Length: 277
Length: 360
Image (tube, each protein chain N blue to C red):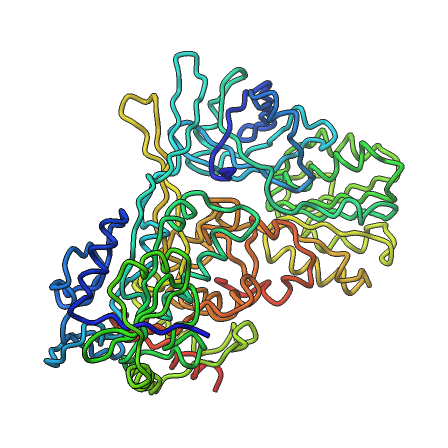
């Protein structure tokens, strides 16, 4: 029997420092057969294991058509990611995956894509941006909306600047607190929807970030007549096993690791915004 | 037509002897520290002769009835779960060599044939649910599988329901209908025996069995009837997701001390956590899983803190998952009416009463 709990050795082929506390690991399985058969979809995640320390679930941000290498962008937030920050090119870690249901990229073809994110960078959505930009002709307009608490929190400024120069791509950024040099909006990311340029009846909205932000954004999208089935949310809960066994990521009748992390709004709308659930 | 055999009480030791010959370690009920526990059973004399339980919310006591019966009690704190889903087990080991390469190796439990004697209907129903969870999904669990494959189950129909039992209302008991290798119904001078599997048949062939008489079968039925008298009930599918903001959650949250007893005695709870045990020399590490509870403050931890932070949150998570979420995940409720969570709750929280208050 295949053991879904067992990690496999992977080599760090490259390490990229994205921001002071954010880094990307480019990985490859050392077993050539395993690597050759490996596949993933945008929005899926791997469990990354650091020797003697433990495992963490991390989104895959690179392109699924180039699965012989795969990238993870990691923010230092806890015990394991803190220790992972010390890893260098040529080091080895454990990887198992890919796990979960990703973004509905096939359903989104031929439509406008609206991405709404909050917080310090949102790796699951970066995979969508990369995916759309690699296949630009297959999608309509791309709207990238990102909100941060303080304007200093915005990472990947260069990338936003680069994306904003692309055709049919709109970048909308908001910060609750701003410094004088902030060239974008102040307030909540959800307030920017009036400026977003997309066709409500032909758009797929993909959301990632704090639940309250996703809840408000979903409501605004519905008010703009985006269909509930076209609104997708990437949820977050504690994950240990990643295969729906350990129960930590329980969310109503769903296991977020297995049935998500990406859900269509109607599957979870009754559970959103319930404090402490 | 099911064949009903009879095994005399005086011949019962032959069953235990047979299990030894067939290479099984026998686990069975016995009285220890004032409760019925399931542990290694070597001899018939260890069985709980004449012991019966009194259970109430937050209350479990044994008393002597002086009867000849060995199985005239409802249930103790645990029966099967620890033998398939181990409370603590190693999953894999990793060795780091001098060049930094990592060598991962699965640690499977060693095959050990175990026969469990005295399994009840509620627990067999719970085992079927655990099978569904660990074996019949997208990612079958090899650790659980190993233990499950080596399990022989000798069920005993209940003849005494505790005041905390409600298996009739969940549809899981007191009669055992499936999932056993051998099934026993206790009467005065022995047991009416039914065969449920090829392995059970293999054992039965070697036992000194007689054909059960119509009277013996009728007596067994009658004795089981006594266990259908249960005062507690549970609605099949309480609409708990519609009641997430109900004020009663605050009430039960104020009583709950978040000890997690309900989850550890529950035969269907499957939550666990994974922990790492690095060796002192830093070159190898063992990855282990342990039972965990949704009443543990770290259970819902994500960066930035736990999602659920108060006993109210924990209890709501437990009850909505057990009685509502399970329907979506497994096609039925996660409760089989054993009543353990009621008896073993130190403050006497009663799941059936809480559901009653929430849905009133």
